[in-house]
Image (cartoon, rainbow, N blue to C red; front, side, top):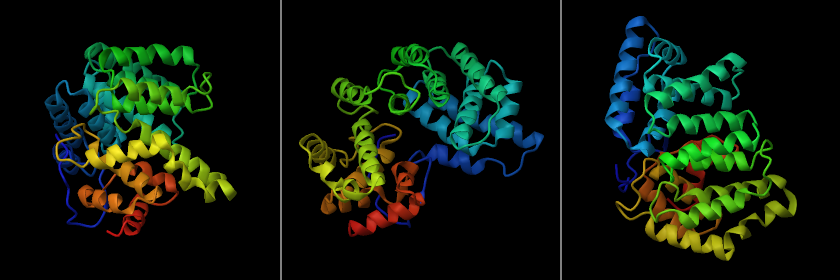
Length: 316
């Protein structure tokens, strides 16, 4: 589903499905209450959507992550228990456990172990799919497991989809976490991935994530670090990246991966932070008010409120 200009016609709104209209329509169709009939209908429509995704692993991961938030946990558990050999059911359940744990839910050890088991069942049911391996990677990262456990999982993902956006984001997060026993590898990881990736791959925004993380870290340190944080956007490497992204990413059809609009949100944040307001204003017009949680939640404010404030600064 190639990215097209999304000229703003409504107020900014948090839109997890981004420009995936089929996914958005399914999320709206999910039943408001958990009943036996609702469980059956919800699992059926979700399964049909994921079947239609086929071998587009990038879009499959995007849909799984959004559905794991939208489908009730009771349905996820029911479906996974009923269909132990169904790749869709097992992957959705594992991702649901992951997201709830990341959000601070007190998932017990049994649920965590069940999620890892579900990843294994999903991988066996659909061996070519990298998604269960990406979820396993995220679960191991969350548990602060040693690198010796994480790297083999990363290698399994690379064999299936070497430019998987979600996998690269998860690996970057792991490399910057306390649990990683490879200190200082995050910068090299981003540089190597960016240098090797095809020009318009789903990982095109990976350097932006790294830049934004560094900028937010400077702001959070306070004092002189916060006052001078905007200067980091003036470095040669960062400036060159923003020049190219601002010029090329907004072209209709240039970005075609599932999370293209999320990467445009990243770029909008970066351009305003770099005080490049003219470019940011044009980009906000193209985004059309479709707000992704990243990177706006990192400001410490509601994502829509943060997006709206940055949009105002850009004169839109």
